[in-house]
Figure 1 (cartoon, helix red, strand yellow):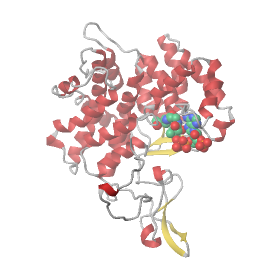
Figure 2 (tube, helix red, strand yellow; figure 1 turned 90 degrees about the vertical axis):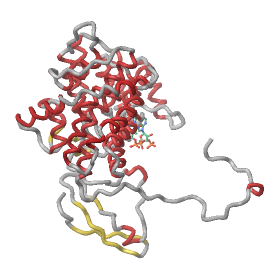
Figure 3 (cartoon, helix red, strand yellow; figure 1 turned 135 degrees about the vertical axis):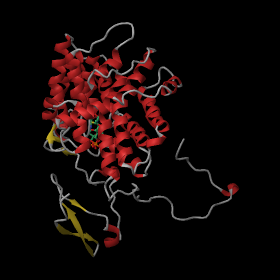
Figure 4 (cartoon, helix red, strand yellow; figure 1 turned 120 degrees about the vertical axis):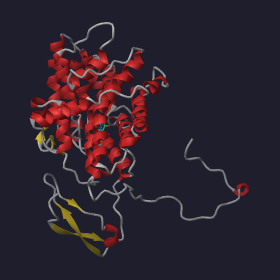
Length: 438
Ligand code: ACO
């Protein structure tokens, strides 16, 4: 990070304070508020951190107004076009694209960590068959810590590297096992002769009784989806990873927390919700009625797949995925009425003043659901695949955090609005009051 460039004035009542201004490589400068209380007697209030930087990072850059997404400086569309997922994993972890030799070694390392301990199979059997695969993944990934006592020293760079490789390599196996378990089918072991995306499709869709070869178009589409979802700077799940990691918990526990955060319908769970929304809309004729509902503040219905905390223009990931949907469906010889419906919904919404004024554009989840469906995955598996893709982002941020001398345990302040200090009253003298919970 470039050094402090200049100071700014900060006013509070009659007090004035000078706070340093930090200059990033790209994007607006940030006021360093770490001495805010000392200088002004006040803390900063920013629930949900909409205006606050929680760390410095050199991994991903997002310009929400211009619709720009860069991984380590490289535009997302070029990465999708010219790289595979393991190139991007290396890039996110190590700062630049790998040389041929580095790529070969990395591919070998990841490939040789894809199997899970056989004992882990027993954990799956403890779940109901109809469990949501994200519930299974939270549990199983957290449980990985119990298998690797020998390499849990988070201050040892070698241990961090092994844990990072294990997580990236095993996550497709764990997600595919969750899927197979839900179907009552046998687990399919990874195949070392296949690439990352192709092996993932193999573990998801192969059965022992017949040969399976993933269609080339499906491999390409999954590769693109994995790349597009690999990182997105300080999103909710990455922030969860950093928060839990800042307590010095092990990376498997932190990743389980990140998976839990990703599960929510306002975050990774939105891709599942998009298809529910499209199914609920049902036909082009019903779009105006559903748009009316989405705009009605008294109606909890929201148009899933529209809007983003950061993007106030077309999400660059949705831009890449939109044509990919049609390409994949054509290559697989499939038609999906939901794609036609989605494109029409986008067209109508983007002409509607409500969406235009609020800068609500389709986000990554709007089209990813159509691709997942074309790949043959049920909605419950959309977010687990997203978790597989995002694991490298979580791991890259965790590594960055672990080597940043500024890292401290994450511990926000609060604006206390409860009662002032008061004495405890004996039970027979207490008055009945409305409970806050229940
Ligand atoms: N449908 C209808 N109205 C919406 C939508 C939507 N999908 N999204 C935002 N709005 C409205 C809000 O009601 C608000 O209106 P107001 O100013 O009249 O009160 C305005 O647009 C601003 O929205 P906020 O909720 O304040 O924006 P915020 O940044 O807090 O939320 C979020 C962003 C959570 C993504 C939101 O747009 C949303 O709920 N979208 C649907 C869920 C979704 O697609 N999530 C996936 C995000 S991508 C990802 O996580 C990988």
